[in-house]
Image (cartoon, rainbow, N blue to C red):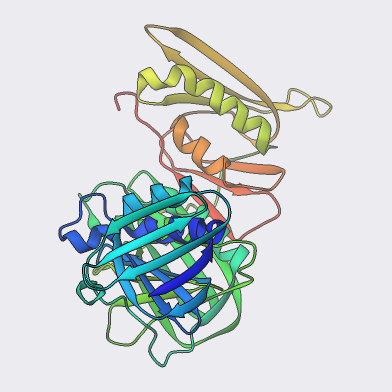
Length: 378
């Protein structure tokens, strides 16, 4: 193999595929990145056997070939090279990759490419098209609600359903739930239900760029896998087995109080309360008070207390329809959801201190977030 690429392109490529390299590989080759010439481009790939990422970058190919290189070593080296042409030459006899860039010459010992696991490729399914910016936003508004531990493995995934011309993504960890929907230009004749690992979608969301006007979602039949096709990147993943809970049963349909506030103001108030709530399991009181008269605004007050460090009250003007409320929430959960809402205003709906609260962006009905209240002793 003899290949020339631009350092900038190579650095971007290894950064993308490096996200699939496991921290503690069970096999030595899994800690490597595959470099392979393919149809006039350089292919880079990495996998942890559950998720695989493949990227292609433009290159000048003088000789075809393939090798796997230790990921950490190669990424660190590429990032330190000067921004000019990088020449990669493989010595097949000893599986040594020679890296030349400007005044830098390095040799990296690799492993034969034949030992690298196969990364899933597409079947005959043409895929379902979703605008890249929409899919990226759907991911950001759901993955943070997925469970981070394996006590209930199914909750570490994001439930994904394609039914007719609608795509739904939902994630829950037992304390909160995020549901996001979007219409599709071309749907499916039969409903498709998947549970995609949240980690896969997190990495996919980071990979989708403004250049990816469209992402194709392919579900090869009988393989328990999903593949996402971007402009120059493929992300493949195994699916989680099991049945996702019926989340629709926990979404309240009516409310005694609805409170509209500016998203940025409420987010800042939550962050101030969080400074003291950290010492109390992130517990903050959300106190909603309607206006005394029609000409005055209502208020939302966030109150948090630390026995060691003090307390804080943060007050935000709001439009309150309904009764006064005092509810304890995990303020970190409020920060998480407010951080992924782009609309200027947000509505907080509730039915009292023991009922779940609902957060939605004002003017949109495609995103719903449910937060369970905290009990005093939690």
